[in-house]
Image (tube, rainbow, N blue to C red; front, top):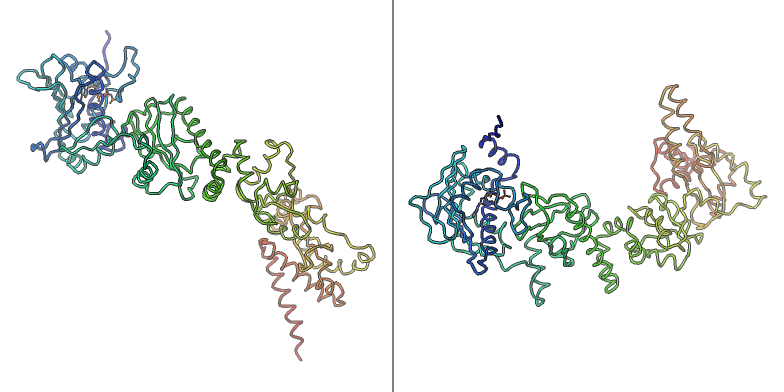
Length: 592
Ligand SMILES: Nc1ncnc2c1ncn2[C@@H]1O[C@H](COP(=O)(O)OP(=O)(O)OP(=O)(O)O)[C@@H](O)[C@H]1O
């Protein structure tokens, strides 16, 4: 014999209160929603001019401790009461195939149950056109009764009465109810009153006349999000029945901190901090949208992630992009201000989007060793875009490269390297070249052969001083002449140096493994490039005292490390210290 499932109502209420909804406050939203749907149904059924009013009476108005929500909706007949109020999960708002009907907010047939989060008893007194009034009473323990005898309701519509639970009375108090009704219902198309005072406003704030619109929107944004927007962008996605407004943040946003968006579905607030409305790169905007076609999750606190939401997100992304492109075309100064604040978001976008890449190329000034300029200007002036991919590398070689007439872009900031490396894909004529510190030494002038020969003994002494640090000493001539020495290291050289330092601390088995790893190219060694154009270096190279040469070379090594912002290893610090004290000692002279 077939049997049907039995439902333990207490279990269901527990599920709703503790697991589905984030807070008991949703009870008011569900009541409002039912009233709105009932009015919509009545109007659709031919009563286009039927009254559309939702009145909420908190306990201080009803006088008996209950809260009432009174609507002028379609009402229910006795049969419908049995059908829809007596069965959990049954809803009048689905079509014959069980799909949610387009005009209604509700669809699941569970909303009314949320009232048990705050009430022991729910009473529904309802009257449909041409039918007698019916009273349904439901209790938190799963009992209900239906009564027609002696029931009166003069007008068509429904009155829902909540008898509060003792521990939940505060949820029904007037100040809470006003707050909740305004929160959820302020944009509803029908009049909503709490104790006779209207809480629903004058429609969608972004759908107002042109005059003073800008100021009104600014004020709206300030009220809602607490900032005066940089700009407001109109949003519209007809396929999702969506209109809205995106406010551009006036200050940098943390890309990791997801700013939530305010989402209304059919003008009822769904969420104050919804995610997934805009693409992740658009972290510079917060928006308010109202959509007719997007679907809520069952808790009605977030958007359901489906293909329509995905397409909507993409369309909204396009609209923000369009705004940016228009700004670039019409008001470059304003675009500059925008980029100052939000370059991170725009650059992130440029990694995948050709138009944005062009925008960054044209409008975002990057640091170069000849001043800040856009990549477009850099290309126009110098043709080839040479760049350092690491901030540290740029700091090491920027000044020297400039002195040698080699313009260099600092692409060490986030996304800049990727942006430059993507340039040739978008601009086929663009030439780019990554420069590493090691590359620069080959651009330095070698010495005359006879000078080279004459300085060999000095170089050998200098090399001996730095051998244990794994640093090669070379003598070259370069500009600026004021710079005595430069420390150059490539990433593989720093890696090799780290390996060497580790090798000194580990046992033999590991040392062998590390040795195998450390067999890097000789070219990868770090170099101390002494500048033969520098008068001090010349004098050092002529000192007869080997001890003084060692101290001087060590000192130059330490100074070059510091100037290039290189990290000082313990061995470097010890060397620097020894050299300083040794030089000081020599300068002060020997004790008598
Ligand atoms: N104020 C009202 N006027 C007329 N009918 C109502 C009213 N409130 C509830 N009903 C009827 O009771 C049914 C169940 O309501 P309930 O709020 O539990 O679910 P729903 O609104 O259909 O769906 P959802 O769970 O998505 O809100 C509704 O489908 C509707 O037929």
